[in-house]
View: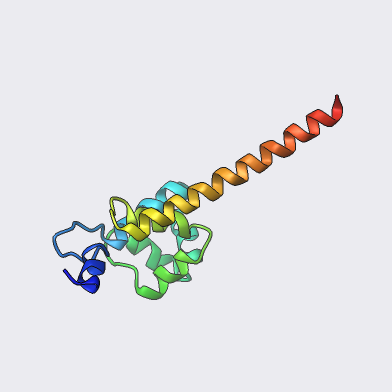
Length: 123
């Protein structure tokens, strides 16, 4: 197997893998993040009309590429990306998630270190 074919074999482009339709991922995240006023919140982040967001939520239409990009660039972007990539075994996704987890743990560690330092100063 060549280096290029190896890359594509691990890229997630395989036709045999199941994929989550974007509209299902978007609607799942939207309902979880904004259980009330779901369509309004979705519309504002995707930069679409509230009517278009309602049609997505009803399963009657699907998001276009521009709307998906807007959502990925919003405060809900990482949640959406995780939903879209759920079950992906691609190397780049695993490495990215691991990097995010490390950064989160390091931030928590720093927060706790500051709390410990403050308590020690009080002694």
